[in-house]
Image: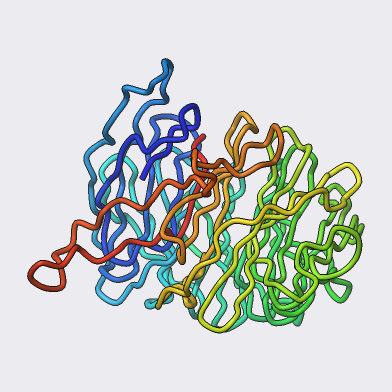
Length: 391
């Protein structure tokens, strides 16, 4: 589903594959969206609809979907690229990274990596690609030019890694480990760790990391502790801890009884960050977004969203809640697996959009193209599992 920011509306849907779990947008050139389909070993590619220039929006429809088949048992879980020619796919079931031609949608190379690769990070200059291997606590350095492995990086600081990001100047790559919460820093020029033995930690259980290039910061969520750690990426290594924001304690704490911080996104204008979290209570889930003033690194507001029954299967989704900010900093979009929809936050007053009757305005997931489970029954519901902003 593609959302038009100017009208907060669904302007097109694309039928991708079974079990889509992650998506990426080509950073420049002819726009393409890539989707990893974990249940049918494919990558779907399509062109997004152009943005609306006049309201009400009359733009509809996305480009035709093209599928790239991966070897059976690949189980793709992550797609990523900073190039215009190749997109890379982490195959957790095959312990490989597939290189796919953006022009022909054909797999050109299968690159062996470590056990259970779950994330990728390519430097903006496209000189290095890193595969994060959660199964054997390693990081594989890959040469994007010839699609070969440079080296495998291991260290006690790399313990069940699950996320990696490259700095905007291509000078550093950051690897987040869930096992200990440490952030390992790699020098892409040498593939050596910058901070061996002296890592900065966001606490065991940390699950997500975001890099905000304008302020040169790292934001790390920890659902176990209910915290967000903010690091200064301009420091080398980023041991300059700017703040640890506890959602369960202190002034304006949005969930004093405890909650799980799952993801964070920041406005491109650098003024605020938005933390999506949830509270589980029996068979119900309450979702909320916490607003952070990035000048003071303090909580300014809590925004309550849905409170609804837990949906079977959403608990195992990697991105049970995900967020994305619009390029003009006017909107934050919150995709919820349990809600089956996307909520919209207006950043001018940090308020969730509402319907005339006062309920939260959401963009529901499109009706499934799958066959109904039985006569007279509707198609099975769809549940958002990832949201990403366009270029």
